[in-house]
Amino acid sequence: MKRTLLFLVPAAVLSAALWYGFLGHRAPSGQPAMAAMDLAALRADFNRAAGGTRLIVLFSPS
Image (cartoon, rainbow, N blue to C red; front, side, top):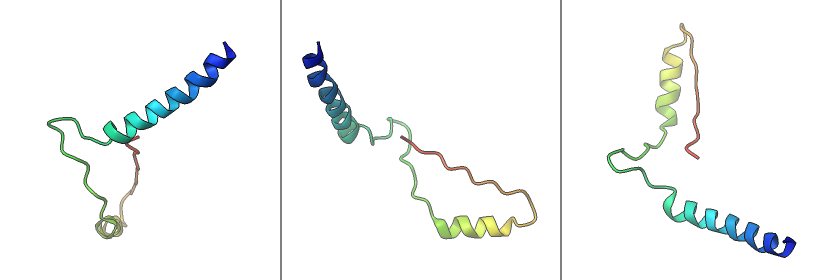
């Protein structure tokens, strides 16, 4: 049992890493790819709204 786990656990981790590496970075069909973040535009919009409540929320796709 222990010998089987010593083989299966690394094999599962490697399989998951390969799956994510080759297939995990594609947008589903019909959905546009994520846009790159423009920090200069974000800073300008943030500073322009100085009189109101500002909130920046970052989401990770993974």
